[in-house]
Image (cartoon, rainbow, N blue to C red; front, side):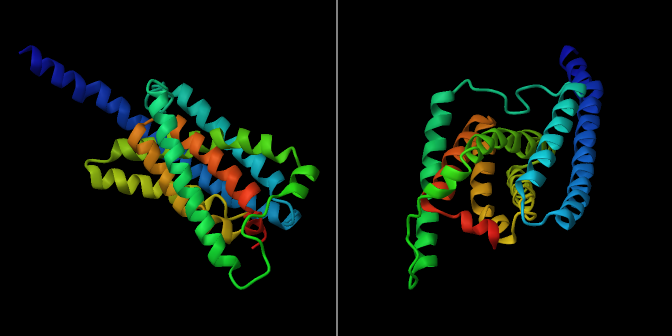
Length: 236
């Protein structure tokens, strides 16, 4: 008798609230995607040669909207991946994932520069001297990106999944939307972020913590763009 009452309680108000919350999140992301499309269309007409001034306000706006939505909808911190309980394991798995991404980037760069005069490792010394502020800005943007695409979008899609196949589909969808958010910089960069995005999506699905994908994103991103030298992708 008690068990049946508990089942009614779980499948009643709680399930209804959770379903309403999921609909709210999906509606928010539909609006954000529409806003992204309009913003980029307008911004590129004004100043197509500079993308950071377009990216930063867009990312800050999306982060603010997602944060306010999380607070107003009483979304649990655990559902948003805001947990660090097994932080040693998260750091370990993030390190392994970063090494795999960096090695793949090196192999790709070796194939790309074969038969040319370009160096395999192209340390961006001149870029760092002239635009040193890019690194702290980049490191600030990464947690916001992961909060938007992993904690908010991917979490909602995974909660709607009924089996492991649908969890995988949710991870792929969130990762592709993440990659698509780089289209205003260049199609080549958007394409280059597909595989790393899938890896970070898997990290989040496996750990349900933002720590692992955020750490891997920061480490591999800095090495790939500023040590190996893939900043040319932003102009392709």
